Amino acid sequence: MKIKQLYTSCLAEAAYYIESNGEAAIIDPLRETAPYLELLQQNGAQLKYIFETHFHADFVSGHVDLAHETGASIVYGPTAQAYFDIHVAKDEEVFILGDIRIKLLHTPGHTMESSSFLLFDEDGKEHALFTGDTLFIGDVGRPDLAVKSDLSREDLAGLLYDSLHQKIMPLSDDIVIYPGHGAGSQCGKNLSTETVDTLGHQKQVNYALKAPTKNAFIQQVTEGILPPPQYFPKNAVLNKSGYERFDVVMERSHKGLNAEEFEAAMKQGGLVIDTRPPSEVIKGYIPGAITIGLNGSFAVWVGTLVEQLDQPLLIVAEDQRIKEVITRLSRVGYDQVIGYLEGGIATWQKADKPMVTVPTIDANELKQAPDGIQLLDVRRPAEFDAAHVEGAKNYPLDYLMHPPAELDLDATLYVYCKSGYRSVVAASLFRKHGFKQLVNINGGIDAIAQTETPLTAAICAS
Image (cartoon, rainbow, N blue to C red; front, side, top):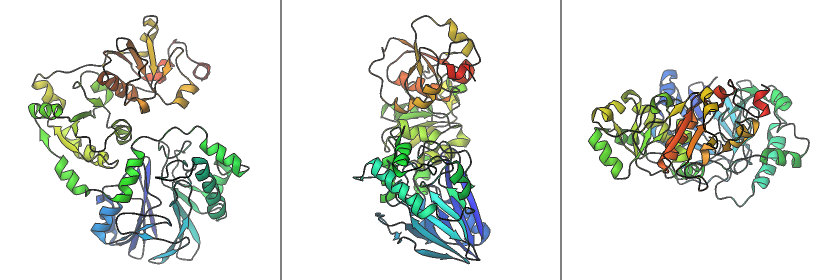
């Protein structure tokens, strides 16, 4: 028996490859199928099942393409309905894979079709549980993502409690928990950086599993949940309805443009995504672009800030990373890349096209800023509440796709985040919204905390 976790850090997502005696299953695959096909070929295995723990909201699964390429069955739990061929399994239905067995456990709560997969080894012993978004390491799935459900998040949290206490917690303490996500995912609020643990240890340390009553559990898991990113329900719909083949998207999107062609495509409605690091962007970028660095949670931020999946996109990146950009966009359903600037930003500069900079100061210069400045903290509310610069106002990047009406377009905005990634994204959005006077604070609050700038007590004490 072989189990391999395939973890993609930019989405904080875990897919799984399971193999026994020449037969394989894959749980929750990402959009691109090549890594899974390569594993199958390397191991001389035949893919028999594609197990889906639920209709994912935070990424587009590779289930449809993978089934088309291998003939494997797509398996969902009870109540699932899709617009393509799937096997809707019964609760506790058993699937034979080589010399092992995998039992589906219906565990609704995160969504109604959510299911976990219990693996029995060659000796018939409970060995591992693949929990999807039902149980994470350190957390449980948020109960507010069910598509077209008439149930409240409190109703779903109650179902999640029942699933955990009736289906999962009675299992052996020594079974291995393999979750669908780790820290950084917005499918939960307290996920650990660890991506594997035993059930027994989770019973000891996971706050949700230690709730003394069902009502306490409901209160704890619903408290402090922020609205999900706007692309979540759209991705869930794609996972139910199907999508264009990944190889078709890749071939169509990989189109190099010179500066004149790129500029013409912009005028026709193409939105420019500049994927370079913040340290490069602040020196100059194309007016009207949104700057979202590829070396970060790139796809998540595109999904959060670009409202339409069918928005024509134009890419600025190093030529050798264009395939990576297109792949990561497709993982969250953005399939309409109409071209990239061939040769990168240097091509634009050589053509003497206009550029804008992001004025940036070091953290120790903040204390020299004029009185009465608009100081904006673009981190999430929990981060802001824990510690922020005195006088700063919280405008989370997550909600800056529209301009804040109360801010003066003529004001000078000083913007900071944790370390400098989100503040540069925010600066490009503010400029796109019509704000002209922007100052980025280099290094964010991590750097500010090392200066004499007054902060809240939480930072000062650290």
